[in-house]
Image (cartoon, rainbow, N blue to C red; front, side, top):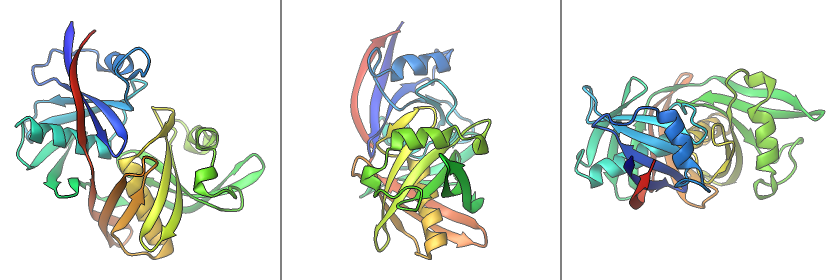
Length: 273
């Protein structure tokens, strides 16, 4: 079968998008593994599937590169919104359905803004043991499970550019504290003012990604609460592209969360599957 696709990137977080409004795609998990393979497929961090919805302009389904269901993907949501606007599937301000929730997307001068669901503050200032050392972290679910690790700290003395994200991130991702599902791991360093530098080891990709939308939200909320820095927060990703996270704090809940940044259609093509 010849399958049309689009390749998009949200601040370096890249995706293969399939328009499945005709319902012709069956096994999406296996297809995601094939298409996201960077040596034998198109190559991407994950696969976006655009389907029909009775509640919004369309429905988004997201699969990690390993074929697993990835939960909500912030950059993926911004990318699918960009595609829908470019193709006339939806207007510049529209809604889409994902994981039984309706999100609102808006095209702005900064790129695509995605209005996210409210996030309860979960576990702040936690600790675990790794290699005989104590690592402190914050745990927040922003539609996908995340921990935020500030650097430097006694157990991770390097600055963020020196952190072995692949090694430490993988250890924390599979740590028994986060069983059975595991977690995404974000390393966060304060640059100045409201600006932070972030690197992410992403569950399901099983590697460092160039950006992570829900990780940026988790990091921004954790930084704002623990360091008493008011939003909006600017997150500099590994691609050096910047994501802007704005929100309100109401008790122990972050509300009116907005994720803004670049979302680009890179190319389109046809692949024989």
